[in-house]
Image (cartoon, rainbow, N blue to C red; front, side):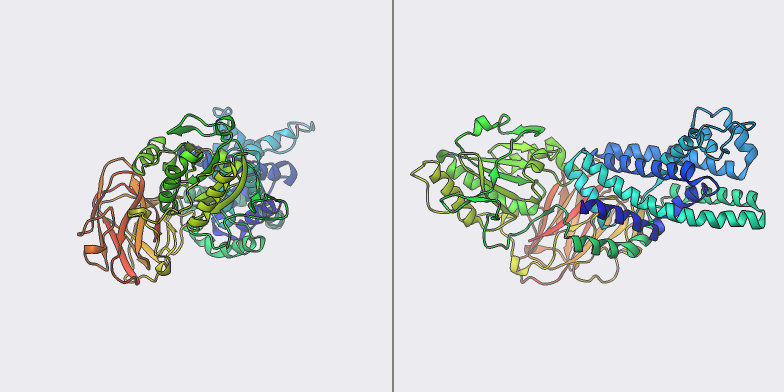
Length: 598
């Protein structure tokens, strides 16, 4: 219940944000109408449309975003006509005839009086329905600031899929904003009424509202509602929202680098304990819901009866997953004859990781031979109540979860759990030695003593420490420049880029990306937006990499983007210290997602 309250409060805070300004003219245009029959239906329609569009955008992928853009174009057109009708009543009268079946009559009828000709009262629906439809049109235009609370809700929506909980959370957020607007409208309505009664300039107020509507439409058409205004808004409300989240201790699903707890198992009063000392955390849920299986037919409970199982949640661009995979691969080979079944559950973090061809190639390149369930809809993820990449769940031969581990590390303890469960299942020849760390390349363990840079997302939904002047401009091409100096863990773009929620796409030739980092290894998740190879050059403190190059660069720092994946660009052989990383892309259309370090 608390998350619904937080979502509502987060929405209510948008009234303090400049990003709500483009919506206000449409709201105050209803100030002369009855609140219950006119303004309230409009606000409800606006909140409902936002919840629907946000749900589709969060769970439906790129097509829903495009559909929303088309909806915005239609809404801009309809509300532009609405603004003109406020300025020119004669135009309103003329246009209302041929476009009755379209949006103009809806927008115009919202302003009609509550009685028809004579003294016969009009149906209450004559005002309510048009006002509600006007709210629907406004909801298509509304782009509230993506503060921490809305970010939490949208991330949960992406992970939880299409369900009532997701939509209700988004609707609670929208209702919070609508409540603030309603309060402003009630106060503003009294001011407007007083002005009309005392000054007798109702017609000029009407025309002024029309001009304000057109200005709002122009601002939205130019992207100011999602660009400049959003940037102004984040500085005002993000701290308040984040403090609410911190006090409620609500966290977003995340990657986990290491588990610092003393044990790999979770024990609480609700769990029973086996005589071996390992807790019984529950029963393994079914593996239904995978969109496809690799290296195996779909596995059922009957197929796995009597087997010890390791379920590994991973995604192929996750550096933490890639560093744990050598151990998972080794356990799968070492204990397969003793009855261990390893099942990889691939749950994507980025949209490109839903592409089955990408996952298939990654499974081949990583030499994974055990079964992999492609969990694009997070059905298995939700069944386990999982929140991390990577996450390992250990299941005994009776189908009971006996332990889990989140993140990298504690490999010896994890392997001892496997050995113990195999022994419990009756195998008397379980090898007692442990797998040793022999991984190379990307899978090599991180130099955690020297890692002072953390995973950094590029897309504006989770970006931090962006240092280009003016900040990020959302969802449109913009010319960025790299400042003369960067503080540790700051990064910046140079050239023309379009920054989207989870990525940035280079628009022009020779775009740059710089980062001041402190770690042995630097990785960048990237791809080509048009599928063509993209060459790049990497420098370290302005010089060629030499021996500090990574797997995907040579000594001169040269490399090529050939697919959507994680690229290792730097692995230092010298003492680790603050360094300036710079990458220049020699062709356009590269897409960059996140930095990771090791």
